[in-house]
Amino acid sequence: MERNTIIGGAAFAAVLLGGLGWWASQGEVATQEAGAEAPAGELTPEQIKRMGVTTAVASAASSAELGVVPGVVTLPPEARVAVTAPFGGTVLRLFVVNGQAVTKGQALAVVRSIEPVQYGASLARGEAQLAVARANAARTGQLAKEGIIAGARADEARAALREAEVAVSENRRILAQSGASAGGEVTLRAPISGKVSAVAVQTGGPVDGLTAPFVIENTANFMIDLQIPERLAGEVRPGMAISLADSGETPVEGEIVSVGNSIDQETRALVAKARIKGSPALVSGKGVSVVLKGSRAMAGVGVPAAALIQIGGKDVVFVASPKGFAKREVTVAGRGSDQATLSAGVKPGERVATSGLAELKVLLGGE
Image (tube, rainbow, N blue to C red):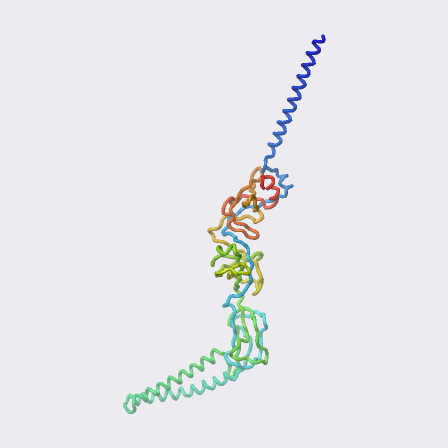
């Protein structure tokens, strides 16, 4: 009886130990299976939402943005035109003020001068002398032809006629170009459309032929003086496209026309000049931010600049996949304030993360 009790106890202990072993092995399998359910990089939609991850679609780019540089708006050299008075005199009437928009041919002021009257008198005398010179040339020519007088006298008469014709023609030209009336009044008109940038006279004041009473600026086009940082010195060339940053719904674009040959020792920057289309928001002297655009050869795929992150000293983006996100190294061709251009690593149409990058970096095993 005692022996049977001992055997029964041993059997029960064996069964108990076996059950404990099975329970422990099942717990280990469950732990392994739980770890396999969420490998690195795989996220559920709920997890993506909690992490605040947003995405944007990569698109094909026609050019690469090299960067954003500061610039100052200026006027091209041919945009300023001085309005001068053909004769000295006194301003009778003034029709415009500084900053006023004018059109080509618009009256700016009326000036009275004694000189047009004098030219008119000279013209009248010249026309009288011209009639006499013509008659004399015709008479002496006929006499020389008949052999009554020497041919030299006929030549002198023809020379006098030519001199009278030149004097009359010159006086007529001066009076016609000045637009002066018979009373000596001259109307100064705008030679181009634009804005009056300088008014150097006033009603009743004097005007001379050596100074410009008005300066008109054509604001249809502008130039921009750019400060190109040293790192972009070898990449910026004439003909490169540019655009104004934060120009609103209507883009303001242009191109670089010249690049300096040396770097300024104080600013460590190259000076470049660009031409750009006119805009109501632009005035000469205004500071602007300019986006430098590379050539089509540098074009690739455009993504938001916020999608880029540095991991291990390399540029990386997180590309969306059916199960979550994948880390992918990229080659940056150009980087602007809002947009970056990639030459390798991402295809058009793929979605890249633009926020929650720090969480994705930890999740995918970044440094």
